[in-house]
Length: 99
Image (cartoon, rainbow, N blue to C red; front, side, top):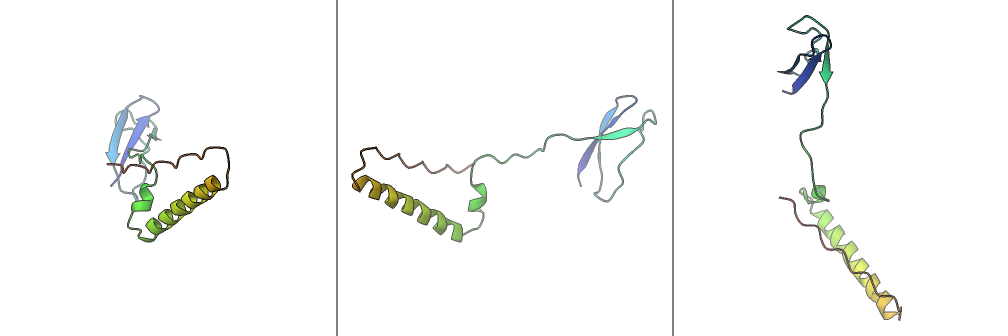
């Protein structure tokens, strides 16, 4: 069950309460009988890194990623062999797995 945070508009009393999704929101302060409001704050979970969703039980995405990286490698090789005087940009390093 989620925990909700409330603040009283009259006495500035703040508290948290565990409620079901189906429960009605509280409207009366237990301390002074004033009006309550819900307090919204930042989410407590943060996903860091790039591409974590691509590794979630997907066997077809790994073949798609490898085919696009091999095609970009072959295209940079063909540019180098065509006699272009500009140096080719190095390929980006693969992202490290988040722990």
